[in-house]
Image 1: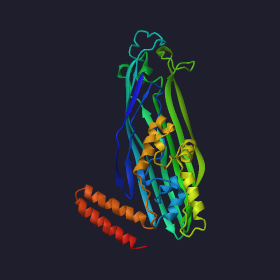
Image 2: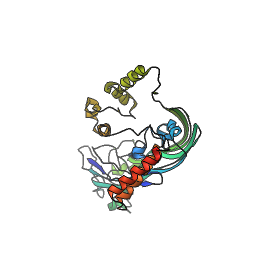
Image 3: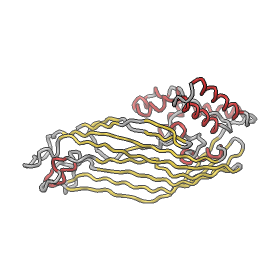
Image 4: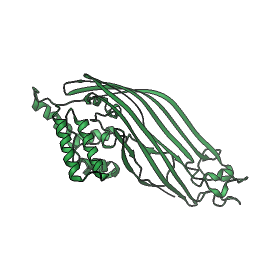
Length: 354
């Protein structure tokens, strides 16, 4: 048996953020066909991370909104389009097929699903305090396999219409909806923040089973096993953004700590333990761990060309100016040279506000 998945991706700006049209390109061997989708928060693209100051900071690191300015509204989302096929050949241990069930358990099944999750957020800065709220779906997915038309309307074997893959999965869904409130405080160049989350989660799946609960493709004893679980939960999160001051009384100690944390072996140990972060060190992708995990290795290799955003109080507006001018050039409303010149002028104006 083989299973393959294919999706495509594209993105464009929406409101003050990005609307990310994302997909998954994956291939795997035989296995359980269950609901899957985005397993980690992807909203914000390169703008969503632990040092961001836009409203996605309410998820990644709430301290970030204390470094923002004014009021920000954010609309973003992940939209995934996935196509997959499941091909099954008769196995040596399969029960014999009675007359009328030919093609019920061998052949090809297909799915073509569209699913996604939004991220809507707002934050406002009032003096040294900042407040924010958001509604987001950081994790989730959908899968619904196509039917086997040969058995549509069959009086004797109607359940076979759910496809040859039904012994592994017919349909499924995972949904996690976060409602978030956050507050952050800035003192100097240090900020701390905390959020509270109300989480609505649900898990649903259906697959074919026999009365004894196994997945043996026995059409004459076929039934359905359904999992339907949902609930409401609460959680909280905290974060901080720290820097070493120019007037620090112990600069050597601060530098030594930073170098210790940035050592590849220490960063790698943290990444392996946490599973939700990657070591921000060039060359970490060559370790044995990342050679064995090429999907994570791809994320680490981005650091070879990545640059941290400037620590400037007007950076949010500066970033918007750059994006606006790039967009003007891409839409042929300005020449590339004119867009660069206008971006430089607008950046100079922002720098002059400091």
